[in-house]
Amino acid sequence: QVQLVESGGGLVQAGGSLRLSCAASGPTLGTYAMGWFRQAPGKEREFVAAITWSGGTTYYADFVKGRFTISRENAKNTVYLQMNSLKPEDTAVYFCATPSRQYYRGSYQSPHEYTDWGQGTQVTVSS
Image 1: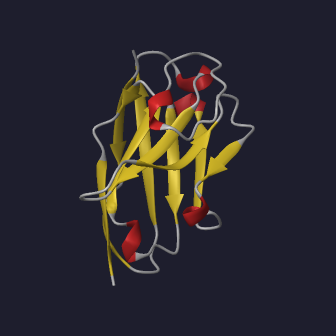
Image 2: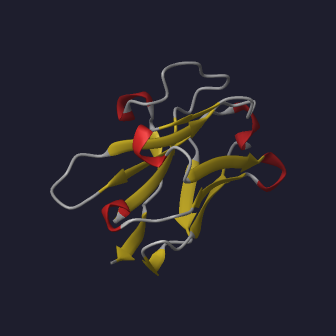
């Protein structure tokens, strides 16, 4: 099992930036795909971004393309989500997650593919 801890959330004005971090303990992340999801009050958890275990391919939800960037630093067992040009509608709790299967290959966009989740970090964007 992979333990995940998110950090970096906070309050920011529209147009601003934040960088979320997801630190893992337990197995090293180098062979695990990673994803970011978010959940706003009263809404279902939705896919934001994912990165393959090799880091060679990334996936984004249409509503964050060109604004968010997912990356990984395996030496630090950490995955990042750089969020630029933030909008009030980006306000949500952001979660990182992993399918917990080495060398996993899938769509990466369904929360049902992921078995281990962090506790989430709140991002609030004011207008």
